[in-house]
Image 1 (cartoon, protein in one colour):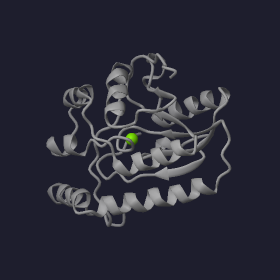
Image 2 (cartoon, protein in one colour; image 1 turned 90 degrees about the vertical axis):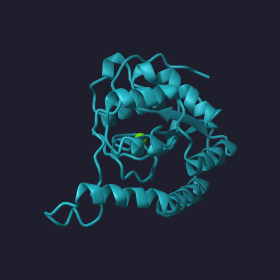
Image 3 (cartoon, protein in one colour; image 1 turned 120 degrees about the horizontal axis):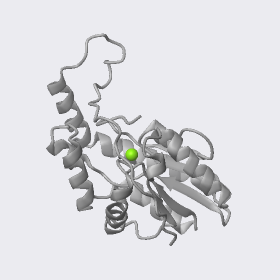
Image 4 (spheres, helix red, strand yellow; image 1 turned 135 degrees about the horizontal axis):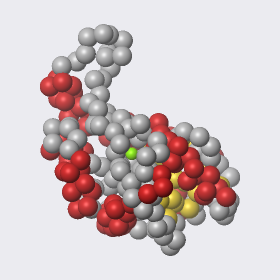
Length: 220
Ligand SMILES: [Mg+2]
């Protein structure tokens, strides 16, 4: 397994933005924050999130099944809210973002897998498709991220890429695009990207877009 020695970087250059849900975009009156938090908790815990995930992953499998697969075919997975769920940790801080607490959480490497994503991961592995994890987490979080992915059941993948000191302030979408170009230059044919942020799909060599829901925060 190739291991990239990427260095420092801040992860989550973003605040956790509470999604004000449907209606907010069409109205100048925002949803009360307390109400928004309840709506988000309900969304994640009522089965709505699960149902949405189920459909997205099923659709993705059907699309990948139609594709011709080569030895070089690869799918790029984001980590947070894609491979791993931080929902409970974020809810614990009332959907806020405290950098110190976030770093502590990440270093614990205890985030559970998102099972639907893991189903897709196994499906792709069976088809001999290369798996690559590409995260905007910072370099100090590399080891914990690697450990967390493995302990959550993502035991086979070609590489985990996180930020380096050199791109610590680069917008996530630009950083990820550059890394996908590097991967393509290494010979990978990226046939799909799985993520929860628009920055997971910006630029070239994205392939099939598999956009997972995230109503807890937006990153740049
Ligand atoms: Mg993410």
